[in-house]
Image (cartoon, rainbow, N blue to C red; front, side, top):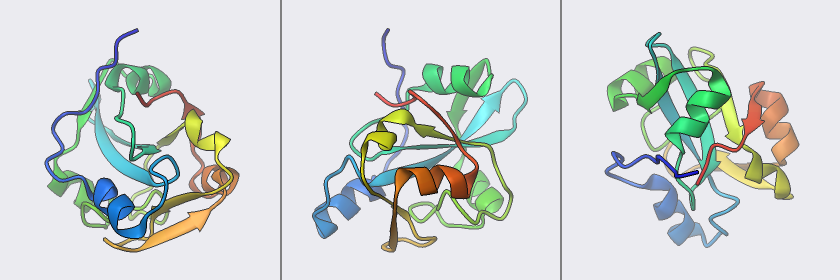
Length: 140
């Protein structure tokens, strides 16, 4: 199965965080807001910064025909956070969340703490519980 991954992100805040903090990129997670087709509704994907979101796999996991990255302004308006600091928890509007299943193999993970440069450490199971997320293979 080929990977149809994100290619439209211009700034990689997660890679910047890995470089500055020195953590393994498989435990630092990025939160991506995507638009579902044909409904136009939004959803959230959480994947390790060392991976990309597989659009086809994510669409399948959330029951959409197709997904695209949400415009930064749309993501910020829906979550209440700025791009690069979007947290999977505490969003202004609760969006469906799917976390890549590879995350479950880690003893701990780091997610955005609601602003750029702030990370929160927790167990993957706590992340799933706190966010009400489902898990699936959505990264490549």
